[in-house]
Image (cartoon, rainbow, N blue to C red; front, side, top):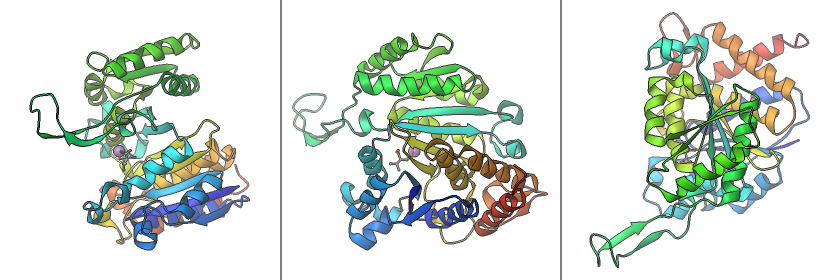
Length: 362
Ligand code: IPM
Ligand code: MN
């Protein structure tokens, strides 16, 4: 099993190193090869997604990704900015289905900014369409306006668009995921204003006919943003487009109080995937050894489950993470009075130790 390891920028290198350590202790036939991506690749090769990195990702069975981005690249032309690496990988690998679970760990309930009773036991899954919508729609650019409020002035524009097959396939993914959970899908749209999302709503409704055992509700995105902080536990699976999913998944992640704990998977139609923590490169804390590696370690577990068909190894990682939390070990982002503050590396070591001590017992 070949894994492309792309640590990227900021805390990316630190957290990916811990996840690699955890994968190594599992004694699986994994072949891991590392390549630069994002700002690191721009420095090394003049492009955020160099040919060699893309080739490695295309040839691998799965990609383990850290994070990209740093303010110092904000002035570069768009095509050379670190973010283009992750967008380019999603497009080139056809990673249209993005799974972003928001789970509130029992020991971390108090870390949420919401009242504990609102988030205790929270377990929702945001499924974000990842290769369409206004993120990739053409045309886009700048031009001189010929109409609108200020004809003759400079303007910028993007194109929001979805085709029927793009909506159908993500809807199937959502309904199938719901079948393995609580059989409820909330499809989030803006059908009251946008043609693209009236179409989205119509197509999701049609696909739903194949899944009579799953409950479907439709919700406008503004209301969904409100309901997520009002009564988040009412959701099970949320399916939505690329841009709404970007925004709502950050909101949902923060409900758990610990974005440093949340993994994600981005899958193609054959379950080949890219796995990354839900958080970013956090340049402000990079190099300090204080970042939480658990989201990346849990992303590696998702990789074993979804792409590499190793559900038992994935379960070993997940229970090791539960066990280090139960031991009271916390990185700075999830630390609270009465728990023990540990570094990035100490947290990785503790997970490795928990896996090693569980050997033969699972
Ligand atoms: C994410 C990020 C990316 C996105 C950026 C870095 C391009 O915010 O994965 O959610 O907008 O999709
Ligand atoms: Mn985002």
